[in-house]
Image 1 (cartoon, rainbow, N blue to C red):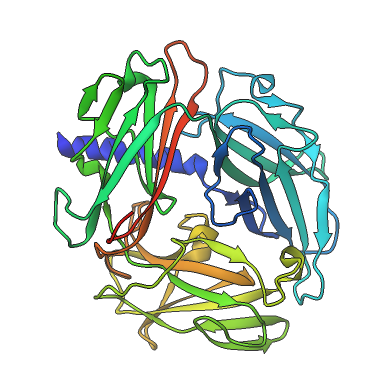
Image 2: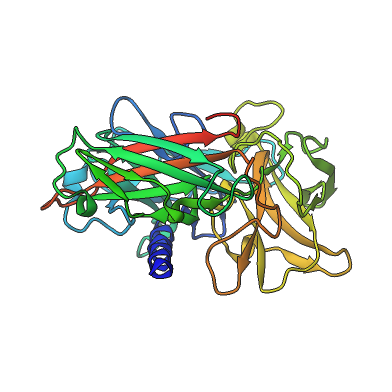
Length: 418
């Protein structure tokens, strides 16, 4: 029975992540970012109203103007479209507005135009909490063609979330896992049947491939449910992310072995990584990336693009593939981020075209036929690893027409405290 429960949870999670993750559909577009309140390290989640804003930005590889329009869609907790509400229910304004903020790159070898869109803006504002998917379309043909999707969430706080993370898990003690316990206090929200009305999601480092959706609470008290000693909430601990920084296309910086010019592109070769057997603390940003350069001015249009070469020294791992992973891969296991094994160098290798900046990354092994990655065979799993955990709580009362996002808790676990 336990195996069936876990399997159903994983299937539910797979359904959720398919619709949620950012996605670029046009190969001419690069570096999609969703930035909340001008802080690139924040997740794409913010409170409804209160002067908060987010900016969606991307680059198109030319100096030619393209007419892009956008559509905002409210989604259920599982990221399927909210079919029981109308556009006018969740939005002031109308879909189909053009993106009017754009600027050509300056003094870069790769020519691109940076497009950006702020939410809310003078044309639209959003009225309901919950999940949102914004789709950008190229509107230059007979029919609009989708070119990217960006996902974000708006919160109307209504529940309290208490949470702890422990390395003393139900399957091991101070070894390779971390376990989340949490409670939801819904005293300020009218909830009659919490098992039916509340939906929960728990994520580690904003990864949707191994998220936990709707774990079963084991304690229900007055206005409160608790999730303790739940094996579904045990996560492989992973390891600290690798990191590098390209501030100058002529000078190697953080963890860059060498910078080279091979007409018509700059190339950055990173120092090789090794498969890990021991834990070593190294401060990271849990997979995040920040676009910047040495001048740190007008970075959206002055940062160049660089072919970046990754190497993981390792014997070949049978039964699956190794992928680069970080927020800049949008947590997608696609050919663009799949590594190739080089028998001559005894290493996995990959190359990605990236905009100058600071990047975190790790290596995930994905078994054949599966959609969830694990670092156990690449970077290792160590209980000491500092990880970010996010808990989301959705509420749909009996007779409700959409899922409200009423709870959001973000915490960084560290072995010596939270």
